Length: 88
Image (cartoon, rainbow, N blue to C red; front, top):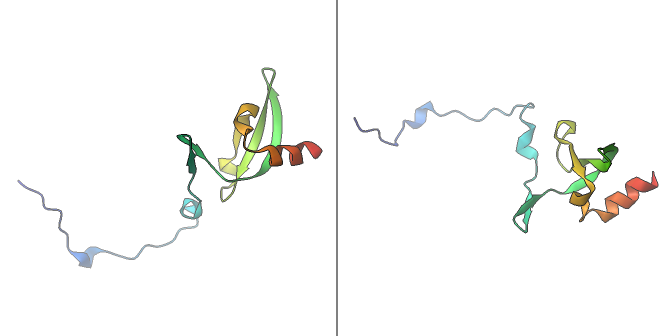
């Protein structure tokens, strides 16, 4: 049996926007040196783990569930945000 990639358009319906699918409005990452980078909105918190500092990063367009703990080594392009956070 052969299946054709043709379908009846009468079965299509409009997309219903769902508030639970907030990912639709999230900006895409930028690729720098084959690494994905996101536009950072700010540093929310910090903690020391096994003698190394980690920072809770808030990316623009993402909610609290997507905040990530990043080591200081990953903050090389965030000097402005790091200085602002350390002043607090």
